[in-house]
Image (tube, rainbow, N blue to C red; front, side, top):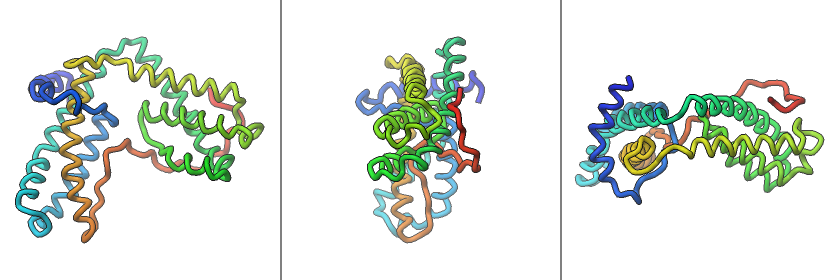
Length: 250
């Protein structure tokens, strides 16, 4: 999608997006690319089983789901366009710093994730928290993961001290980088009608229709093999086994 096409799509949707009650607007949790992946998967899977709708649901519910299903692809495109346009306010300097932080945090996330199962999993409380720090993809995911890992290691430092290839100072420095990245990502202009606000509104509209259809798909899965993912960042593939580092990255 070109910048010009994106601008036209967002402008065409602007009035409807701004009419959305402010209280309903959700902050976008995924990228336009991820929304496209989810939408394509939903369309393929749901279309293959849509013939069973009238056997399982009331006529009114079928009509609602079919209406939502019809707009999911178009609303996804609107979100992709708004996602692209929301990048424009970034200055060259901020873009450069954001990328520097992204590279550092991706490596911190990799190292801290790999060592967590070795050093912390024997602790019941730590093991529960390890299970909920799900690897994702994207700048915000990596920064949040590192922030959570730092907090977890600090809470159980006796298990990691002398074994984790980070000193406590290195660990704290990684946490500061994560906070800096999160602050950069939160600093975009999100006043009503701004690129950031329109991105969130386009996401909210698409997500509402997507989940409406996905819920029905999951209901149908009780009697058929349907797998429709929820809205979440794409998980990175399992890493190939790598030697454990002996020094912190960076």
